[in-house]
Image (cartoon, rainbow, N blue to C red; front, side):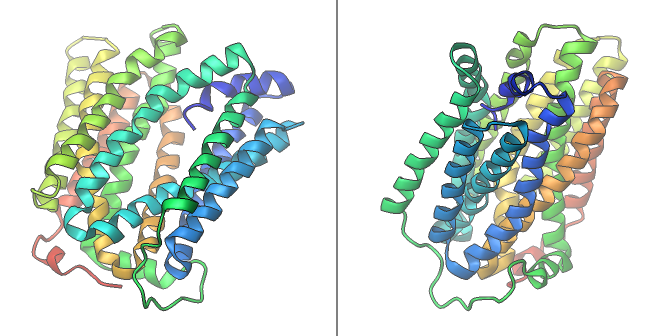
Length: 376
């Protein structure tokens, strides 16, 4: 996704279409990710992690090639949707496989290191995408992703064993609503689900609003975008590294609650800076960097609690948490597109609302009841 973003204007220009139609290459892919989040999780519980991951990564290869050779904008949009649908298997099943291998005690730590590694994508992806567009064509981005996805498919085929526990009874439904209802029925698990969605939406509010503020409100050139966003990505990486080091040493509820309030106070500090008359883009970016540290630190613990509560249905739980997070983030991104027209206050107050809601919900969690989480 990060390497593809710089290609949207080039795709619009080549196919002589409107910006709203070209933007469908992104928005429809988000919808595709949300839908397939539900499907992959339940399929992994039914048929195993390895075969579902092979099918998903294979679909990403086909979707990438379809986009690379697209003769029309419609073809490019469908190719992007297939690519996103396939790639989502990695997002969903990575944490499930980690939980299968490391169990409740070490999952948060391992996921923290994975989060730190994942932040390389928003740092490096746009640079690689921009170079390929300038030197060759936007199509070479998709050729490159197809090659990488195919190599990954081969690695999975050769080296990845099945990690699902033996003796699991297959379910009949593709989307197991009973499992989702069981997760939502328990207040403690529900609070972690809401925290995960709302905390990520705080991050999404920044990402959705900052391009408008850079280009329109502050009238900076687009080339400075990476400068202002880099501290946020690095903050997320730092949070992941902290989680890798300490997430399994601190009670998860204490960690998540503390980070959620730290995130809220960081955004509130940015609002105070503007209220004191300091109109600087760094008054948004630096609080957002602190927010990203808190989210990167706490998210692995929240995800571990969700997986723990689901027992053997961890695939369904992982898929549902991603689906829920994508839906909430999409709504926030749509709202921040309007609120950004109000300037920095619009973006900051949207971030504050998401962060404060996450902090309040997780603070309502009963620490005694989380020790006996629901086992699906």
